[in-house]
Image (cartoon, rainbow, N blue to C red; front, side, top):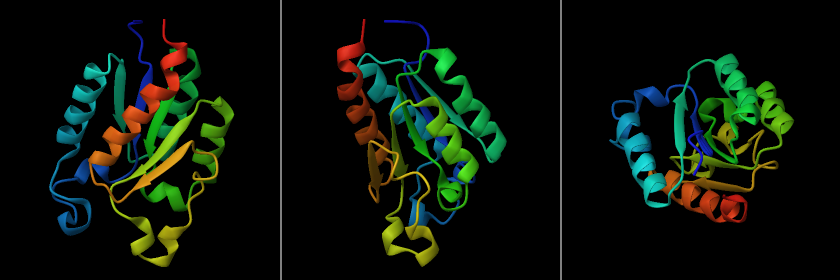
Length: 152
């Protein structure tokens, strides 16, 4: 297995506040706890993984641009509020042509109407919402199955 990351997990704005931010919606797990769960799942699947969070749209865009040069085979992204607002982030992920899964902790379809529209879903291999942190693990398992034919 290559030492460079094969799957990147990107967390959007305010997800650094998990555990204290509206636990009735997002649960009590912190982002560090979620990342640890993701890393354990990736290790069990013999995958390299890299988790990245930013509250800044430009930082997420730059990270996506770096994915091609970093031998990334799959992206798992929770764009958070950028899901509903960011054409720029959508354009970045479209430009690298790396398959991705869109993940949301809450069921966005049971929430405010403005959260029902995603700028990413029509490009995504899959969309997972409402499973809490388990949604990330399902996305990692899906990604592992998708990249398995390309593993060395």
